[in-house]
Length: 281
Image (cartoon, rainbow, N blue to C red; front, side, top):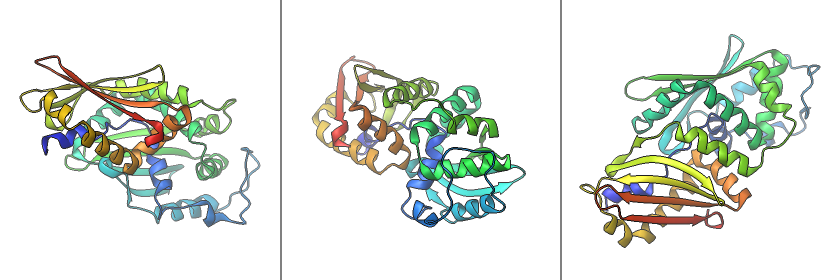
């Protein structure tokens, strides 16, 4: 069953927004209760007076670090310097491909991040961005691979943050899922543990589908078929407990969509499909 463990790990959906989502979904992290009674603005206004409020807000967020992002890694610091709020994330070696994808697709990832933040619709994120805009700050997320120190950086300017807050429409969950297909496919193909290679993601007929090729000298389709129920159970558990999957789960639930994993053997062409209804997540 050790080889099948890799089949029970959902592929990370790449997005800048999930870094902040992980930070604020952590039960020990900052929450709205920290600001009860505070004069929290709703729509962005250039007349917001912040004084040292941004600095104090960032200090409070940094108290939640290190914040786990599950198997992906952890947020190790949130700092405020030189006109920028910076999130630093240490990424586990398994996800080095994410750093490559960011470095090779900066504009695409940036577009996806802006859409994801808009879809997230978090009061705390809005508060942070309002304070940053009022002070003319930008956002920086630094990804560092744990072993090699390989680095990728993503930046959103003050204008980008204003675009997010002033979006003239709310993104639908279907639009969010289609965007995740586009940005996730920029990562593929990727080699995972257990002779598994992720080849593509699709979203049609309200099914969000991951396609995998299986090296049948390492894993067999028959073995997977015999253990489908266990694999499905482990996939559901991994999705529910993995912080970086929570925004995707929200979209699947909002859309009433089905998550699908399809594994195909490289020698026999035999396949096994596992479907997870949004109600199971």
